[in-house]
Length: 197
Image 1 (cartoon, rainbow, N blue to C red):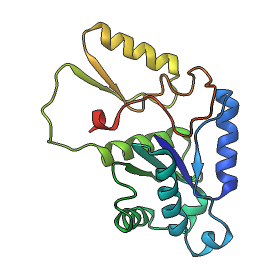
Image 2 (tube, rainbow, N blue to C red):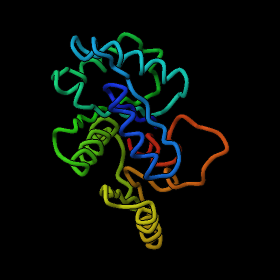
Image 3 (cartoon, one colour):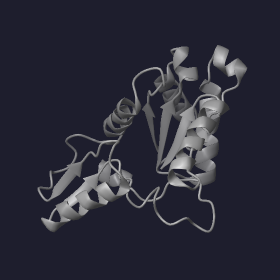
Image 4 (tube, rainbow, N blue to C red):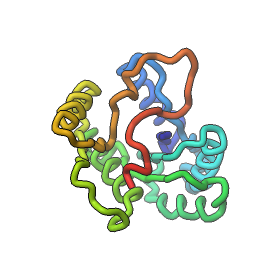
């Protein structure tokens, strides 16, 4: 998965600094890096370029786009921009789910943004009615207050009952895993897109 903040470079840098301080190592967070002109006339071109460039470099199965106040203040049709980008370049964005979570910092707190992101993933990725239900599978939607250890404990508890957990989002094995020898530009681990479907 690859998270992108749709906004200015400053908004993304601030968020990245907070995440790096918390996790004590680099976090794969990208930006559309809107400039002053895009802030005034719209950031659709910046969003499309970011999607195509990041897909070509990293081949993520999921790109999650979170909006910032810069993009939201203009009340841009970001969902329409994503639709147009996927329509204009279908081969370049094939096999990648693009999920939009409208998360400006002037609307709500961290918990609300977390909820919007999880809801957006479920609505964009799941395909209702296409599969039989598996009674041995349990879906867990952990809150933003849960740590990696909390999620691991939930997983172990569910597995001890002989059930298979699907945790969304699954932060275990992600941010707190051992620091790698080299930089990897996308988040590893977590729930697989095909399992979410």
